[in-house]
View 1 (cartoon, rainbow, N blue to C red):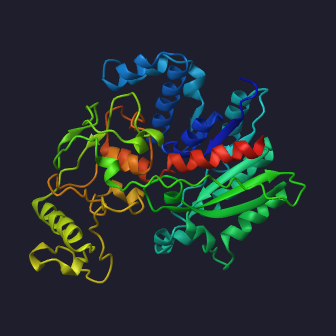
View 2 (cartoon, one colour):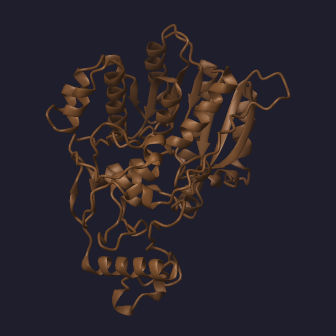
Length: 419
């Protein structure tokens, strides 16, 4: 295994970026993440990969079917797999402890790659609209990212963030992105970056992100950017939902369910559908007023291919005073388009912006449907601190993630460049 390239995932979230790199053939040494629930998701995924590699996948299946506890699942794998997930917010105070744990995990191995991007709220256009965001400590997390580069000096790093990073400024009017690039160059990295749109790489979602790549001691003028291989699967968004059980608002379960019979080459080729049970197909309950609005929105799209403007609603269905802000608060995940709109963490608050296109089901999408939009495999289980399923936590983790398939495409091309 000495020839396998090893990586560290910072600000790992639920592991979308990491999962893509694992699929491409890289091996994680550690994940660092502040959110406790996401850390349990990462631990469970580490257990999944180890069990599958050692032909013990039935233990994972037993866990999904609630035959064994989470503690029993974790005890079935080497403790190093579970301990490789470090639950810490990265700041000056935590750095010594994080470095101590990482040094022990890395030991005498070579850390080839660092991946990850700081939380995007401070750079996003929506986040910036909040007056307190300009002084948010998360604006400066890239400085700590640099500390990891200094200490471990990987050959490459891959940094992901929202488009708002290109225009976000500090209180003195300086662009954070310029300061970030200057820091990475000072540490010894040549920087290349591009804006990538996930829908060009097999993901059925219009999601654009900055992918910045740094290479240590790059001495030539040749580009090293891992331009992913493009893929147009020529399917529409209905493909995401076609084999999932039809459920109503408030029904379904986080526990395993059976698929509806449907053959989809894209679902299999994308890595979404595999041999393990389907989980987290559980719909939110909704008020009668919301359900009526959902029907209104779906009928408008199906009949006129027109999005619902809040002011189009009858007065009896309006409960918000603001008629000039957030007028697209109700939005259908249009099944007949080649890609849906971006899934974001706000999906954990309500489902109004992600209405299922099937009017017979009349609901917002489930965590599993959101996860499929993000190209997480169906065997990916989203945890909660308590060990009991929590739909809100699952939605938040999914919305904050990097699409797995996009990450995989980047990782595959990086590996080709490496070799």
